[in-house]
Amino acid sequence: MPAFPHIPVQRRSSRSARTGVVDVVVIGGGVVGAAAAWQLAGRDRDVVLLDQLETGRVRGVPYGSAEIYRQTYSSARYVRLAAEALPLWREVEAQTGAALLQITGGVDHGDPRGTRVLAESLAKHGIAHEWLDPDEASARWPGMVFSGPVLYQPDRTGRIHAGQAVAALTAAAVAHGAVVKRSTPATAIAVRGDDLVEVATPRGPVRARRAVVAVGARTAELLDGLVELPRLRVTQEQPTNFPLWGGAGSFPARQVAWPTFVHHVAPEDGWPGSVHGTATAEGCVKLGFRGVGPEMHPDRPSFAPDPAQLRRLQEYVAAFLPGLDHRVPQPLGCTRTSTPDERFVLDTAGPLVVGAGFSSHGFAFAPALGRVLADLSTGAMDRAPAAAAR
Ligand SMILES: Cc1cc2nc3c(=O)[nH]c(=O)nc-3n(C[C@H](O)[C@H](O)[C@H](O)COP(=O)(O)OP(=O)(O)OC[C@H]3O[C@@H](n4cnc5c(N)ncnc54)[C@H](O)[C@@H]3O)c2cc1C
Image 1: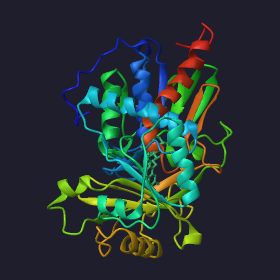
Image 2: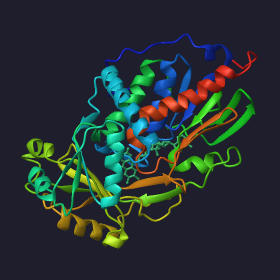
Image 3: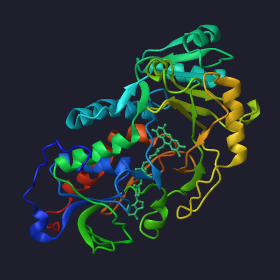
């Protein structure tokens, strides 16, 4: 892993070398698959991680530097999962020396009922927060305009450097002995028994006792006929970078003044959906309407900017984010995979373990999702009969 050459790599005397069957094959080396491989290899399992692409790319486009991390959820399950992820992100940072998660503080504003529910949830979980009136908030963050009460969460909201994060999780998995095979798409999966899965790839089959499938938009296609899944809807979204007025020259000082934010607006307020944003490491703020893009075929993302959506984003920036230059949007491409009720798919079917449907916020949870997928794999494995194929 060239990004982290200093990390000592554990060379395991591999059981798989004798049997030709690894403990777990993880299919998909995005953030969730890399996190699962890290967790599994840390538990002394033989792990092979496959990805169809080369290092450093996700969803067919380069990784960015800013994915939102927050614990501000109304659902206790998400609060707990996000809270679990925070120390795990710190553990990956400690193992790799990479700075991955920067706390920026976060604001939620808009829909008064929705933000009140979020504040109640923060209170219930003992998470620091305060209400600011709009003028106070605009004085604190002069790049933003607020039209109602603002919920501020100071210490458990921030942004994750996505590219570094996937590279670091992968490097940490390798350091624990995982084997990573890039440019190696899984073309088919065959379940050969309770403890044997065969994954076809153009470089030959990989045989394993368990397969963790974390292939994002490709999940339904790869698991067709093997696992009953909720409908996974794949849409093409359009997060967009907007540069700070005045350019990146004075960026470090101004970056601090940008909180991560969610503006809870909806079509009845005149906007397509809620707006989520955070400052990037490159002197921009990345923002987008959440989950409003058209459905697409996973094989055929165009990532061509949608002029209508881009114009609405520019209008939004002009109205609410005067600290940004709305005239020069830099559109980014991104696919979103979600279930009808937006719940994550974390499930098993025989020796198959599935992690999918992480909609617009899976990145932040990734190390905790990796832990869940590792539990599902190894729990099932530990219950398996002694005659297991190994
Ligand atoms: C517009 C937008 C903004 C977002 N913002 C945030 C945010 O601010 N914070 C946040 O937490 N989350 C955010 N998300 C969500 C987050 O990006 C996803 O939840 C997360 O990337 C899902 O990770 P994954 O590993 O499951 O899937 P992916 O990142 O899609 O990775 C899947 C991997 O599987 C590989 N693959 C696919 N098919 C095969 C195959 N057949 N064989 C081998 N490999 C294969 C792919 O190459 C890829 O590397 C956002 C999403 C969108 C669309």
